[in-house]
Length: 250
Image (cartoon, rainbow, N blue to C red; front, top):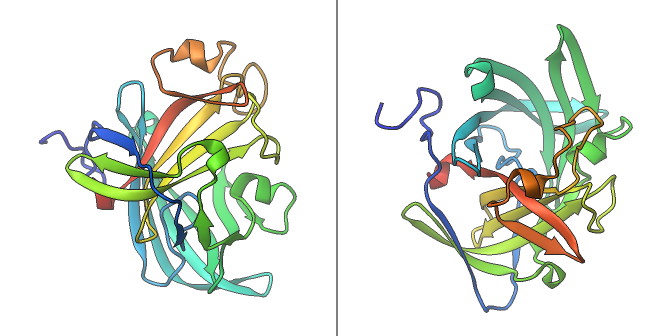
């Protein structure tokens, strides 16, 4: 199969990725994508992206998003996405969801997520408690890097393609943006054209240990993956777990 799986034509192994920080002034870009799903809420838009684990570089998830038409959620007009997600652990069986979002001249916003869990149809909207914690608030399209997280500009090479990018770092711990080893960190590289070419997920070394719906065991992440890249902020350690890569750069 020429090192490719049947679903969505993503390679089974992630192409080589190299990040080179640049000593350049931070720029501001117009970033109309949904955080951090690589999709723009415009009718007819389609994108595919993949999740690779870092330890083996192996493909684990593919996502296909199609903006199928307009929709109204709580009197706000937006766009409906048909989302097909496939996971290796589920033998690439398709999971279909509906997701809703809107794009304005200044902002981009998740409006609702509709899926099926245990044969029960569940709709969550931006008015529901904890929705913004899971999906984020309405975001400004104009985005820039923050020097408190280190370098803000980089050259990103994925396979044979090179991109000059803005580096954006986001931290989340129970809705707070201060470093904490029980939280997570998202590092995204956005091209000067305003498109994300790579998103990286890091876990605080104590994230989801022992308790909670995402419980992953008792071993801290830096001990579980001692060779994975780490980011240390204010003495708090985050461990690289997954890469998310759009089809456009593979």
